Image (cartoon, rainbow, N blue to C red; front, top):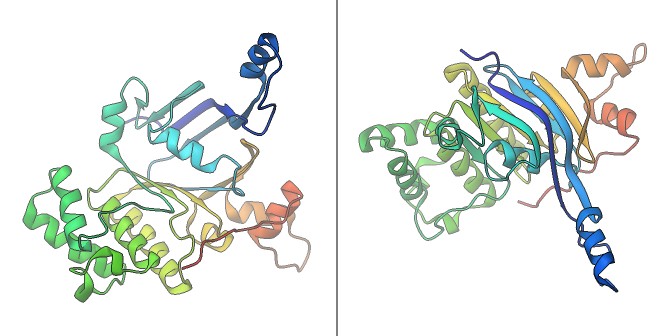
Length: 278
């Protein structure tokens, strides 16, 4: 067994900054702009995640969370550095990495005219899950997520965003991935749906020893389910520790402190969730 489930070593990823110098006067300035007018979405990030750990990444919009998740899931190329998943290099062993992972984003895509059941059965068939096993697992997973099983044969376009997000999470765990990448999975969900999803993540980890990377805007969510959290700002990790240790570090005598308070103490910024509406 490899020492870590995920290892990220000195990773960089930059993009062209479209806001700078859109019109160039000559060839030399244009050539200069191709190398200089870039910003680092991920800027020298390194960390390692243990097997079965729920690892949270907190940061405001544009801080680099989603870029990092997309690189780990092989959807974005690395500019510099290396990432391994269960010992497999995401560049050299891309296919093997994909066999171990599944990903949920804040805006999951579906065949909206098809039902939840049809979408999930289609996903199961792609991954080679036998039909009878898939049916059983679909009912079990959606039941745990408290999705009304009487509605799973309705078109997904009739579902609220929160219900669709539960189906997306069900689809991700249907294949029993070893690494679950959750990119703001509960953004915009009502409080009850959030708790359902959070409880389900904990259950999946306990039952399958699944390793989870979670990006979130919800500080209470991170505090509740993450073993460790990293705060990312302008593409850099500026702290990494357990939620309890971070709060203890900044807590004054007889004071109650939240992770939101910790975020402000570390970054000097008030945390803005910018959550989507249900």
